[in-house]
Image (tube, rainbow, N blue to C red; front, side, top):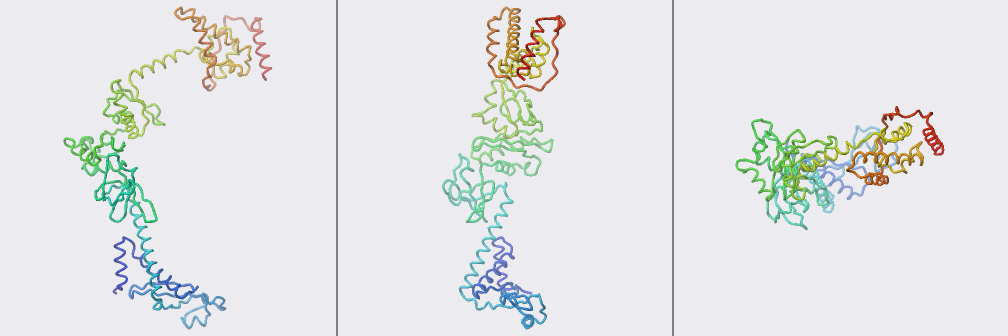
Length: 485
């Protein structure tokens, strides 16, 4: 059975526009339906059907068969229905053909506009769906025109745009130039879908290596990740699935021929090819090339924080111009990288050792009772150094420690430093006293969780109930505690 000439034309139009023929047929049916309703000015329930064999669109008024007609436009009696269709029954439907050969020129023009609109909408939807699936792909296109710094591109089946922010500052294109770019997104506009192209996306760099390096194309060498500072420098991490294939050498090529072709395509952008490693410190050391790294350590695996140590003469090279090298390395590895010289690291370790050595337990303080020592420990003060840095106001906020007790505690700290200076003649007593006095106004460090504190050795001291002095001190503490409560 042959199809009509109209359907053949519809089929050809669908192939040219890249849309489903059923969409065009539906557009034709809707167009004739709109024209029919406009011509008859009817509120009837009209339906249209396209006949592939004859090429005609048949329009029918659908009416429901009822016993009593209340809406003649949509209902029909059983007797009237059986005149049209002898098999009609109650609650059924009958089709009443509406002539379409009387529609005229205006109705035909209306139908044409509806068909064109439907076809345009279908074409836009088809283009949007096609290029949405191609996001990340690199395509070759031609520059059509320049609009305010943006380049309008001819993609063949659609129109693309290369925004100014997606262009390298080293590049300059004119209408008629052929360029390569990565599809980054597809926007819907009133003029149809617009494909956004980028020349700075890392996908472009990776695709260029795939086009220039056979080992990357066939999957022997895999590009793990890439980072770009467009127009200046790029880093790309590669590894090989074949132990006999050097991934870096394969990407560089004989005398750099392969990578040079990519550099020319990117208008002179420098490219560092890095050997990928599953070990983050080793990967970071590779990524900081061309600087020579002494060692790298993981500071925080959860926050992905690394520390890299280099010789002093390699520090500026590792950081790069305006921090470019370390910034690209951090982007490539996905880790935060701190770079320090050997001298800086050595000074930092010495400072930490000095801080660790300056931890004297509170039990070394003379004249403090075990109860006061316990109260200080409960508040998070465990060393004499911490106590020296605690203001008097904070001491009096400790439960069970009043102003007089706080003064006695400060006096004990001063006595301790006086005795220490007496045993170390090279230090001045005035310096120690000024240290205590000066640190009395420094903010207190953050308190830690409560931990068991060693009880002061009171073996050489008289029992509290046998010493008038100790009884007085305890009585003062108790009175102050009651007042505070």
